[in-house]
Length: 231
Image (cartoon, rainbow, N blue to C red):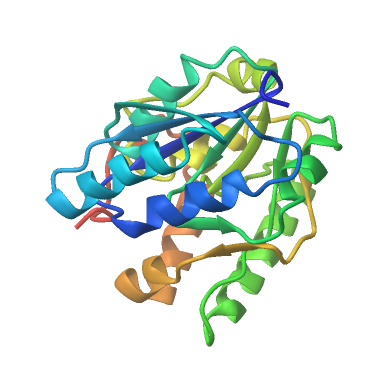
């Protein structure tokens, strides 16, 4: 499968998250030797050390390449420019693939884009279930979206949708995925991520900004401002 899929991970000061994330990728059944591009802008010693541990410890099971990243859209774009495989997975550094069959199951859909529901820390899963409802409604309205933490693309479809726009500093995942023709949601409980986004910004703020993204879906300038998300 190393000629089928490339994984792109934007990363900045993720410390042991990136090590664990790649570790779970290495356990995926049937994907030994898969190319993993880490687009990184870390400037903390601990995080830089973990990047080296990651590259060294998994060098025999995965083909790991480190490149310069930036904001998520920029990092994903730079990684995608190096992809020669028919499929590309954009995966965040704090997303853990607990189910070792996840990648194979997503590949079986043979569609433009596959997304997944997330599991998170105790006491926060209800937030993601509301998020799933919004996602279902968006698909019914003809404006689908897939969170950037896990976007399993057909590479040809990805470029037909324009690829990531490095000028976008906010909700770039919604901006891109809302252009896709066919989005499938793979119903799995094997994808875990941190609840840090909701803890840091607040649930109401996150849902408010999601609604604003929908209302501004035809306004490119909206996505070129960070809206204090990165503060």
